[in-house]
Length: 211
Length: 211
Image 1 (cartoon, one colour):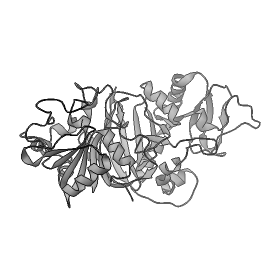
Image 2 (cartoon, each protein chain N blue to C red; image 1 turned 180 degrees about the horizontal axis):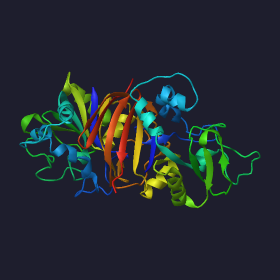
Image 3 (cartoon, each protein chain N blue to C red; image 1 turned 90 degrees about the vertical axis):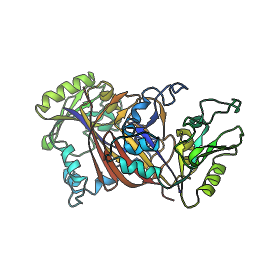
Image 4 (cartoon, rainbow over the protein chains, first blue to last red; image 1 turned 30 degrees about the vertical axis):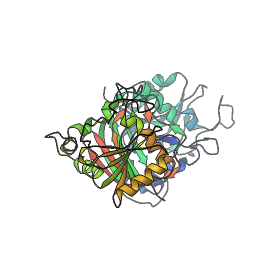
């Protein structure tokens, strides 16, 4: 199964305006993620102690579980563009032990050998498109799910291709007014709403895409 | 208090594309309203018998209650544009006894005397802008609320002017892909989420706009 989850403003933005290397989620975009940083379920996954337990906890645990492979866009993996010319090469934002613990297929136009990290994460660079990345990820995941980690552009490509099975939106009660929209020109398509969970600072809405 | 409620697709559209006189809510837009037509609470208000009771029932009853005056755009009141030259004049879509039972202030560029209907509805035509319409509506409503009935353009004007106190979205699990957006260039503003109710075919989300 191919799935994703993403935080989104009430007016449909997953990043604020003026995204840049210094501000990759755009002006005001951090407000979309405040609900998660204090959760013990998130902190543990990122090697931090302490944190809260609330209605979001089972949601965060669920989106992290049963993931056998991850797909990610180049712009989410690295701030640098073009060929992989850095030495030593960029190995992601997440240190030696990234929080994926699974193969991560990075979509790029520039070939590069895989990077094996600690804790079960291997970054594999895919240059022949989203279909190939999904095929490789499915093979690696076996019976488990493939998760699209982001960014929004990669999610939109998989949605437009009709390849996504399920997704969860973390709807934050804020109007950003401008920025990057998740849904743009997708549909018409009726979704099956699986469940809604109201939690502090966020409403979790999970959907299935009918075949 | 000034408030509104509106049905909206998961991708933020309150009407489908290609709105026309024959299809005022655009292609596919009727899918936003299917959840309401079978409800007894809605049918009674529109003079129809029977219907269902479900989790949406208290929501529909609440949005209809304590309304002392209504504000409406010209395009919602009438399909005709320009001066009020018809004879007999257009008196709305709703027959002799419209479901408002209160003064309805219709925003228009073309002056016209009020139209008193049965059941307590009077259409009052306001030519000097949204501030004047709100002032007149508040005076008419007294201790009760003023509801913006629509369309989306009028709601956006009141939101942009910072005049809305509360609103409720009826979020329908469909991607329309194109059409008229409710939120466009509004914000950044943090909202206070009042409550979320999950019902058949729709999720009701109520918000307060902080001052």
